[in-house]
Image (cartoon, rainbow, N blue to C red; front, side, top):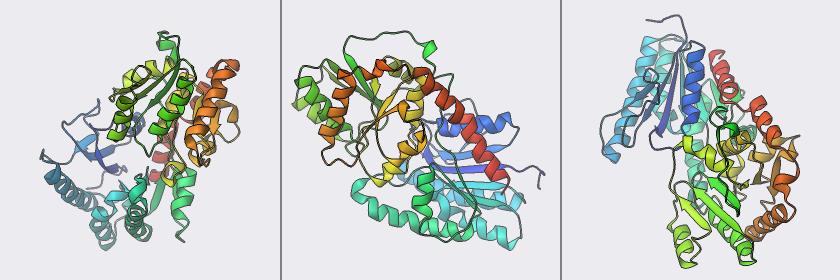
Length: 386
């Protein structure tokens, strides 16, 4: 039966308990609930089924613990669940990330056969991120996405540049929306934290730690300054995916100033950011980083921190007319180690982090444009009017 109200069914190939930052999902569901919109989220799990206070919205598809069985089981259950939604409802929304386009196609076809008015949306938050396999991964990405262009009703993207980057090869005139990463302003509020700062200049990063994200480059860039006598601590928090990074720290015997911490709960991050001097996002020039929307950036800004980041579209598009709220380094400079090192040196030598009091401007900037509620409402309004 159709309940007369549109429900939103959101499927993602995501192990929700495995990611350190699940705000994207949780905050959108909370916003839907606050508007009395029934939004159901379907995903899988790594070790345990965590509901993050939303047991009526989060649905774990699957029972098996084995990784391989679980992956197959999840896809089968997505096919069945999407078909059931189409059989049961007349005008609901089915939203999937690009990996699941293929698995909701049967539901899409049935929707047409039974002349129902359910709408299908692809939500793209990321493109492939491995530089070694990027071209073949993007080929696979477009194989799936081209099916969505044929059969689906709308697309949502994480940044305007991502939309342009992906849609440039299609003639599709279908509705699109951009909804970015956001931030929880209550959690990321500097007034909740007290200063525990050490005397050394604290450079900080949190998130995936890898060579492709520029984390080893950041270590080497900082090392140049430490060797020149600068008192700097570099703290990076997150899952380290390249053993080479850990080996470098051990081989060079630099763990006294270069620290790696395993992932910490989101609730622990604001205090670390608050007690740092300069958050750095060391991403090199690479298409996957150009099209993304760094959730970390919003979190640093909300605490009132100016960030050192590459002049990639993912950042320059955010700041448009507000360049005083960010330090840029040249992402196309072939020698990224020297480039980042020189920018760090300038920022420390000229005391730029304390020069202009921009902390309230940084926070106001995200408050005006990048709260989760604002971003979630963009998505919800878009899918409901399809």
